[in-house]
Length: 140
Image 1 (tube, rainbow, N blue to C red):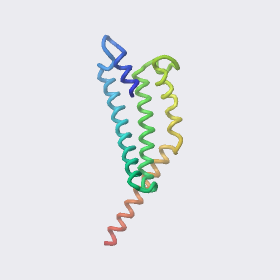
Image 2 (cartoon, one colour):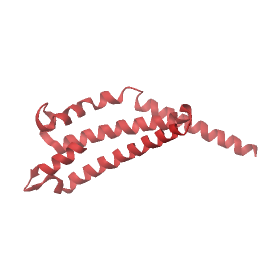
Image 3 (tube, rainbow, N blue to C red):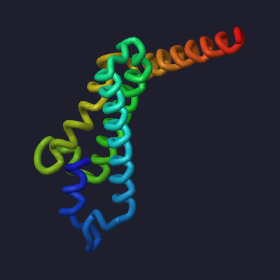
Image 4 (cartoon, rainbow, N blue to C red):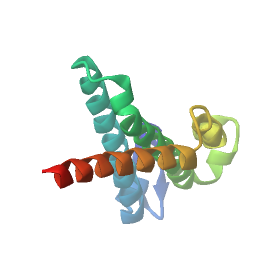
């Protein structure tokens, strides 16, 4: 994201800065939105842990955080590649970092479980929690 902003402020196309094009601003805004959402989720998990919430109670939350982080990373790498254009596929120069991130994005998502397994784990925990609430309500 940061490299894309710098590049969009520096690069000129069709007689104006890249950042002046609405499509580029929208890409950057969506990147920022996703990054901020992941950051907020991460802080919520850290706060819960600091307050003594057991690890097991945070399993689904952490699984969703990992999925959202991986998807955010993938989206930002892809959009940065679009913003950098052809220089993002070369392993040198101003697009070198974007090329490396885009190449490594899937590799970074694999450790800790695939997205499908993590999402399945999350929904199973949510269903179990809901069933527990329903049984408790039925007893009253």
